[in-house]
Image (cartoon, rainbow, N blue to C red; front, side, top):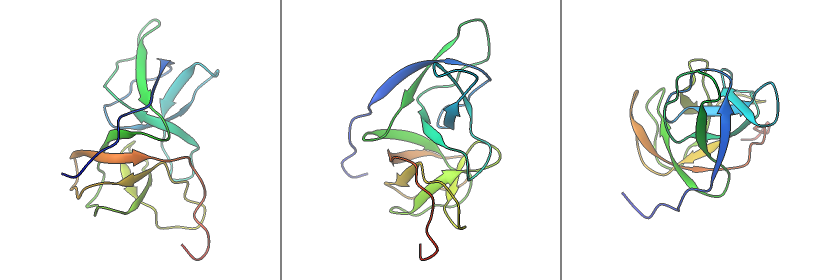
Length: 128
C-alpha cells in the first residue's frame, strides 16, 4: 500500500443504517446522512464506521480531500474513479451521468475494505 492521505472527517446523525465504507448522501436535513443507492446519487462522503439506525446515532463521514476505506462492490483497480452502487458499495464509474465520489488508491475485490481518496462528486462526461 502506498501513501494515503489523512481523512477529513465530519460527524452527522444517521437517517438509516449505514455500513463501514458506504458512500452517503444528505438525508432529510443537512445534519443527517443516508446510504447512497444509485450511481447518480450526490454523495457527500464515505462512512468511516458502521452505524445501526437509532435515536440520534452519529456517524463520522470522510469528506472530499482526504482518504477513507471504501467498500468494494466489484473488482476495482487502483486509479479507477468510483461511484455508489445500488447495494451501497462502490463500483467503477462506467456510464454517462455517474457521479464520482472516490478514486481507488489500491486494487480490491468484492467485499474488500480498501483505500480510496474521497473526491468532490461530479458527473462523468461523454468522453470519460
